Amino acid sequence: MTHDRDPQPASPGTGARTKRTLVLLSLVALVPIALAVYAYFFQPPAARTNYGELIAAPAPDLGGALEGGNPFGLASTRGRWVMYFASSGACPSTCERALYAMRQARTIQNADAERVVRVWWITDDTAPPDALAAGGERIHLVDPRGNLVLAWPADPDIKAMAQDLKKLLRASQIG
Image (cartoon, rainbow, N blue to C red; front, side, top):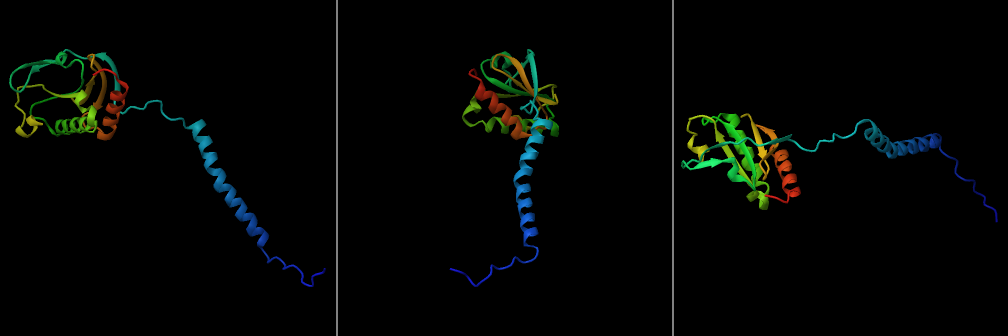
């Protein structure tokens, strides 16, 4: 059986367009792989995964009095995680931000929040403002055995701070 029709001739430029499309699709597939290989070998991720600065030292033997006048010492918190911040009773804006960050980071822990104690050490005889009384330059974290573990800036990234705390509480079987 013979056909009287000849096949349709290709329009000019069809071969070039097909090659361009093939090259473009190849690039779309290969560029992410090439970037991943480059990043793996030449841009390794930082080994540090914590936001706060790691500290490996026993906590200082800090003591004082509670708001009602009862004595208080860091040793009385053994068995619990302690976030503390030391500043003047006048509590400048840095202090307010630190106390707020401590409260938020603890609250974010949900059920584990009870494992964490917040302490504000007032370093002078200035009475704190009433709004803050109900509620250093760094926030410190003490583990349940009385060791300094982390220090965060006074105006921290609250989510990153809470993430550090979450990792420690999850990994810790004490406190």
